[in-house]
Image 1: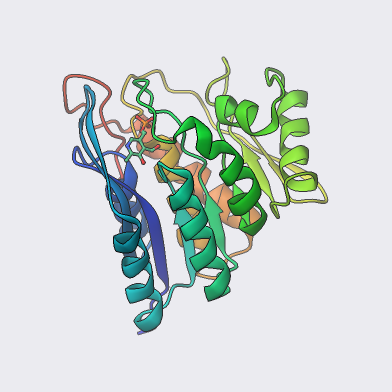
Image 2: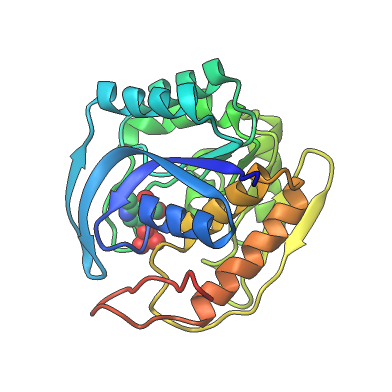
Length: 260
Ligand code: PLP
């Protein structure tokens, strides 16, 4: 049996809805062997983030080295990186390993408002990590921070995606439209053309971990060798179903349904 392998470098969500827990569940559902390097541990449930405990740099580096020196990874993704030093370390490891199928989910703030990336880490994200990305998957607020522009229309989303590719050096960008009203259309720009990822909106408060799940699904498909556009469409279908078939657990913003 030949199995594809994917690595997530991200934070832990004790509540199981976002972070590495969401990533590993997504990898499993898409028939990819999942591995993780944990950057920070959060004490978290559907009501919010109650504590953040950063893992020492040495511990992060050792996890990545242990994985890459033995098992190897066909693709990787990054999620919560917390501090500028973590971004620099992770970028260094990815570059040295020559890992080209890298999905960067530029996690900044949780839906409940907890800061998951230090404000002084935004430059490191732009300068060190984005140039290594096969694709970057910002939501609209993240795209605004990354590009410095206001993003409200579909045209703005296209322009932000172009900036992320042409000015910041990512190979492709998907600006996600879930924060706009109406149907949640995402814009993919691959340096040559635009593609729209369409889906129907389903009204629910249970959307915790949607960004993690979407980027993990892209990573899983890239690990299998699928081209980016196909991977992005599969991921969009996966997250649309995961939201629609909500589990309804927890008293706050519950997780999506990875079995959907
Ligand atoms: N906690 C961790 C560890 C995460 O990586 C993320 C991902 O973005 C979140 C929380 C945020 O989850 P959400 O904003 O979907 O509630």
